[in-house]
Length: 108
Length: 116
Image (cartoon, rainbow over all chains, first blue to last red; front, top):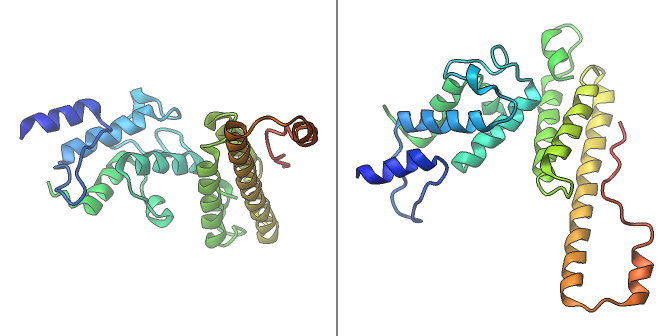
């Protein structure tokens, strides 16, 4: 069904689902978009410098405390908690997307 | 203790202290979401306090600072419980002059003092 995915990509954060029903169909592209949106909205990140490969500490100049806040924002967007030891390995948007793909069973 | 301890392998404190500090920071951020003066205000002050202490390397000193952070969390919990109590009291009970004057004298405190 094409229509729901278009609405989702436009609205970004609203993921309608029924309890016990099939969740939203997620693709890697959609995850990329959502993660980049969350990061762009984060006030410590300069949206012009943001790409999928940009490293938080090296390219975007975030320190470890900003990193904590950033992971919290990702947790809020996707609705599940990311343990600290996993979080410290996520050093770029690409890492985050890969981690989410692993957790959410997205294979493409 | 966060950035400086990663780069210096010789005298850096044990890594479990580092993860304790990160967990403390995360918990404080969660608590700060309900802060009356706003999340941004709380977050900026919290960050500056953590950064100010980031050079500390002595594990005992770090544990003292972590203890202080946990105390702040308890204070925030107490503050929020008090605010909820007052909100409900205000909504459902008539204002009584005697109790109002007795309880609003010293406490119009907005923030638990974050010393250091």
